[in-house]
Length: 102
Image (tube, rainbow, N blue to C red):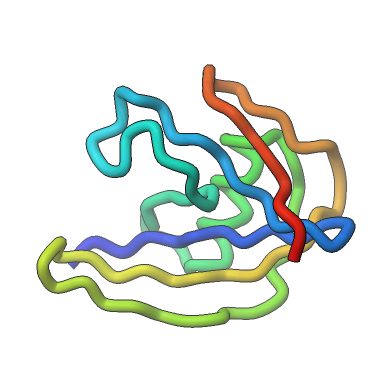
């Protein structure tokens, strides 16, 4: 079973979403949380790595909000709430970013 994190970044009473590339296999062109695959690390370490790789920010995981197994996709998702410690989110790839009110 593959394990992934969904990174829920809250800042200024907004939750950060990105619009996925239309070239992605899963959810192409859809709005989603920043996410990534766990690679020989903890879910919190994955959240830190993916936030820097995809958004250019240093984050601090705050807590694990939920775990969800998706047997039909052979996947497990960890939803992790995070706060930004350093940097301003920007997209390195050609996709969109938005903050939605809580």
